[in-house]
Amino acid sequence: MSRLVIDSIGPASSVQDAGRPGAQRYGLPPSGAMDLLSLAVANTLLGNAPFAAAIEIGPLGATFTAQDGAVRVAIAGAARAVELAGQPVIMPRSVMLKPGESLKLGAARGGVFSYLAIEGGIVGEPSFGSLAVHARAGLGSPYPRPLQSGDSIDAPDALPRAELTLNWPQAPEAPIRIVLGPQHDEFSDAVPLLLDSEWTVSAASDRMGYRLEGPTLSHHHGHNIVSDGTVNGSIQVPGNGQPIVLMPDRGTTGGYPKIATVISADLGRLAQIPPGCKFRFEAVEIATAQQHYRAMMRLIRALPSQLQPVRAAFNLEALHHANVAGMAISAFDD
Image 1 (cartoon, rainbow, N blue to C red):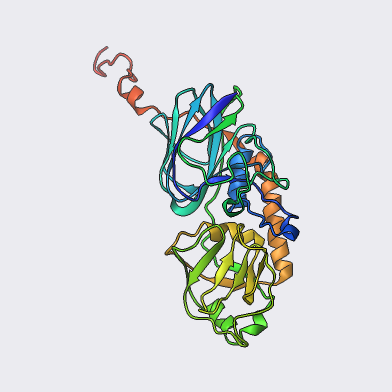
Image 2 (image 1 turned 90 degrees about the vertical axis):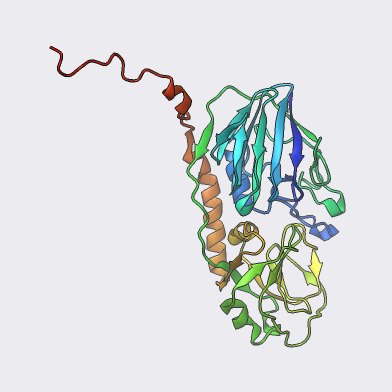
């Protein structure tokens, strides 16, 4: 058994999988990856189940070292500079760390979260069927908290095989789609304002909720309601009129009116919008939201068919020292 040692890692980094559905009746949030599609890409590159637990890496960088044997990992998600043993790596792809080699990830560029999956998956003790970390509740495994320097994760010895990549297009710059409700009738003129305005992700956002900055949304009958259930993507509007999109570490109930819900297929795209960046909303019908979710799941199931071997890197240094012309002769010689 090998180990992947965490030499350094920023905040907002933890082990996440698809979350723990079915536990909200006990007051437990689902948790899980902020961007399920990127999690599936990283796992597929290694032959893991698409939603197997992986390391969710926040906007800052991280460094990992293999010990006691070779470890194969794969990286997907937000673009960032990646180096293996000092050599650049273009993601998404799998790489093998030989014993003592380090993998260095820079800060995210144009996104927030990346996923580092381990060949064979992460071993831990499930809580309510999941390894997903919810730090406030002390749930998750192998560490029920954000990861930190000095942590190590057991990993199977890397299998001898070619490294894989896939052609993964960037997410489109399109509005985030929402379904209105369940309390949109509590907002009168605020619904058109929600749809016609630009919104900015606040720096105060986290895995519990994305706070949005923009025009003030006015309540028709006040900002308090009898607490009821929430889902991932619920858009609550508290008393200050600034919306909060509830994310995987949210509370299971809430007492603010919910003007709309981000569709499941777009929640990962919203999660990858960095603080300070602007976006818009677009309202769709429930049937359309369901169609987009089914399309996302079809895409995830089709990921293995998109795998292809990584082409050998072009070694410019070796070319400088190679005799590529052979023996030169004069064209005027007989």
